[in-house]
Amino acid sequence: MTTGTKGVALTFDDGPDPAQTPRILKLLAQNHTKATFCLVGKNVEKFPELTRQIVAGGHTLCNHTWSHDLKLGKKPAAKIQADLARTNAAIHKAAPNAKIKYFRAPGGNFTPGVVAVAKKLGMTSLYWRVDPRDWDHPKGETHAQHRSRVISRVEHNTHAGAIVLSHDYAQPDTIAAYRTLLPWLRKRYQLIALPTA
Image 1 (cartoon, rainbow, N blue to C red):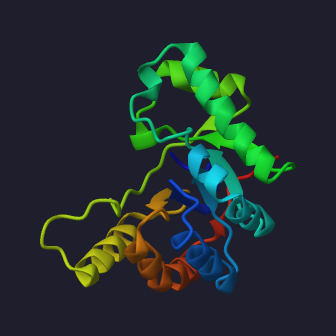
Image 2: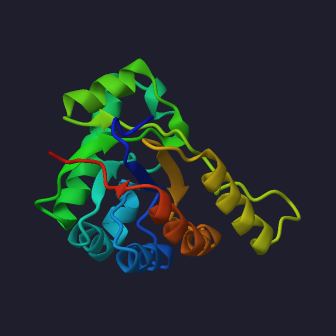
């Protein structure tokens, strides 16, 4: 849930996304910031070049399962292991030397079983402290309202050591919010990619 240091870790889930991932990578580069990307295996398979760009940018990788199965943690250990191994294999096919030290359960649905399998595969389970619910689009909320809600929640809830959850997959308003958030966060915190060593 926390980085264990004063550093704040930004995490982006569910990608890579052909439209939004390049936008957040560009923003992060402009702000000299490293982040952690929790990748969905089937998206990695579809967009291997984006996976390589994430690695080339010096960002940390996290396994976010093959198809974002919210009930994976309740399945038998062999099924969990097959899913996580398939995701890691897709990442390594795209970026052979990539280190995958973290695992995040879709929806934060961690179970002792899924945490144990991830650990066996050499991955630390990664939760979060700050969730702006950027994936949630209430009926009637405009793009501008959505952006300001994400900005306000991140600004009010982030403290030293926090892990911030966001999504690059299919969330253009999140990327737009980070245009404001990245300079604001950088003034106040050291932004870090989670360590891979």
